[in-house]
Length: 443
Image (cartoon, rainbow, N blue to C red; front, side, top):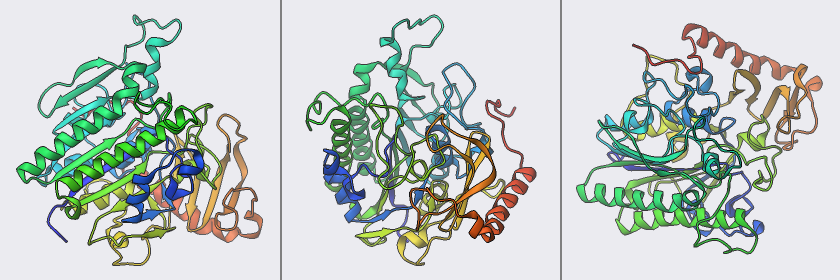
C-alpha cells in the first residue's frame, strides 16, 4: 500500500439515498449532480452503506468507530447543556495526527461545544465551522427569540493548543454562505499541505442539505425548482471544487476521496428529501434512515465504475481510514468498526460485515443481518409509532425493500443469528460499561 495517501472525507447533512443522479435522483429531482456522478464513476458506489439515526450519533460513530450507545452521544442537545465526546474517546483525527498527518475540520462538528471538546482539542490542527446544528441559524430571526436565555449561535474557529473563538453570528445570511467559505478554507489547507509535502486529512462536513435548506445567493433560482434543488446543485458544485483542486495540485493518485451522508432525509416539509426506493426518513429505524449515499475513489487501488450492495457501516470508516493512514485500531476498548480496506480494493469479494444493531437514543430499535431486518419497535414515520412490539417485525429487504410485509412467522430461524448479535453486544457493554449522556470528562 502506498505510504500515507491524503484522505478527504466529505459528509453531507441530511442527504437522502435517492437525491444524487448516481442514485437515481439528480436531474429527476430538478437538480443535476454531475460532479458527484463523475466521482461515483471513478470509484466504488455503495448501495448498502448504513449510518445512525441522526447527526450526533453518526458523527460520533464516524469519529470513534464505536456505536453511540457506548459513547453517550445519542442525540442533538441544545447549547448550554452537557454534550459531546468525552476526552477519553479516541478520534479518527487523533489516529491520523499521530501518524504525521496534517488534520483540518471545516464544517459542522456537533461533538462538543466546551473547551477541551472542540475539534482543535480532539486531534485537528485547525478548524472552522459550527459547533452544533445548523437549524440554530434561524434563532435570531425567530419571533420572540430572547438572547438572555438562549445563546446566540456563532461560527467558530480554533487551532491546536489554543482556544476556540467566535468568528461571526450564525444567522440566515451566514447559513447561505457557509459552505462556500468551508470549501475556500479547505482549498487553502490542501494547497498549503501539498506545498509542504505533508499528507493531510481533510474532514469537510458540509451544511447542505440540512434545514433551513437555503442556497448561496449565486445559486438561488438556479434550477427553477426551489430552494432545495438549488441547494443540491450548490452542494454538488462544492464537491466539484474540491475535486478540481485535488487535480490542480496533482494529488488525484495519492488521495483517498470519500463522500457520504450522515443520515437519511429530513422529515419536515418543505425540506423533506427522498430516500429513493426505501421507506422512511432520519429519526426512524427504516431503511430510508439507515441507508445513505457513499462513494469512495482511490485511483490505482479501488477499481472505477463499481456498484455494490454489500453491507458497510459508518463505524467501519474509523477502522478502515485508520489503517489507510498507518494507524492500528485501539485495543483497550470495544471498536465496532470493521476494516473494509480489502473489500474496497477487491482483495476480498465481500464485506466482512454481516449485520449491526441500530439504536435510537437508548432503545434498540432494529437489527440488520444479511438481507433481513428485525424491528423491535415500529415507527415508519417520526412521532407516529406503535411503540415496542410484543412480536417483532421481520422483513426480507431484497424481496420487500419498502418493509411492508412482516414475514417473521415463516422465518423464525432468523431470530437465532440476530439475537446472538444482540447478546454479544450486550455482553460487550457489560464488560466495558457505556458512557452515559452528558458525562463529564474523566479527571
